[in-house]
Length: 421
Image (cartoon, rainbow, N blue to C red):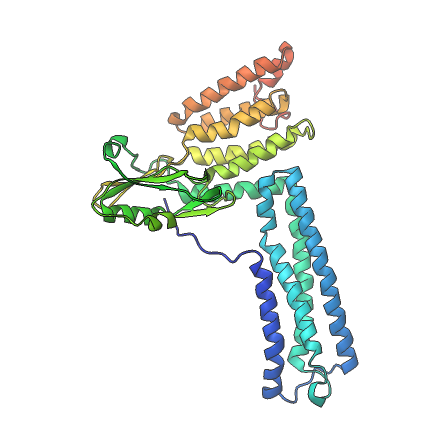
């Protein structure tokens, strides 16, 4: 299992701000450097032509930026109503959108700055590099606009489902070792008999645990000779006085601020270190598609395709990774991670409940459970058999007609495609 320190990222609003700052700096510095180093260089444009071109580019960029903002708002609203409100954050954070805004802003600001150097100081014509840089920025803006239009296709349902599942596949690969890897499971008797010497609680407004720096907590616990038991898992929302962790035993005092610093808190869940979040979003899309207002079971079947792939990858990984030991082999850190049953409950229960009357969804879910049983190790089978029985119970309750009940009980990967005999 790899634990990487969380990399600090530039906030989304900082991307266009950075572009704007660079454009302003270039508009102030570059013409002066060109005047001192290349005093005779001219663009070949007359003053009137340069002013017309630069003013047209500048005003056009303002209009294009307004289009981009409108497009962003439409994307956010559409993703919220059609898929899941929790996907709004990821659509709004699309780097293509913010880089496009940055290029448009930079083009506008630099075009305005370039106008100030037309025939400045009595010189005839316009500087060569500064003038043609405006044209290069215009071409870059056109390219970014084309890229932005292409990103709109992300709102197609199959791409949205793939986009969500890709994040889940990445976090699974980064979080869990192979199934045959030797991992240590926490022994409650190893620390519950030791008195609690420190309890760290959350103070302030509700915040979500977005990531946890386990190596830092392990080092702190090992240095103090203590056992740190984390009670708030990644994805949990901490409220006032909510317990984050407890320290059992220890030979020295631990700085509470260092323990708090290992928690990355934010306003919403993220994919980072949260393997359940991708499944949560896929389930949200599926149950919204199954709502009476939408009534689109085919979308739910497509979501189940991605859910099956994530469950298949999880079932082939070692999920019991919550115990961390120091170099001497002593237990020092216990972190809660979801178990196999937790993943299956999240993936099956809500979709089974909302799609209980859909023959298409029931057939796809039966195929999903059967395929996982065939593909995964035997120790994963018991929980899958349990959900198979619950599917049978839902079908028996939802379909009174014997023929419909039989049809809904068939395994079919397409829902209503090629049934298995």
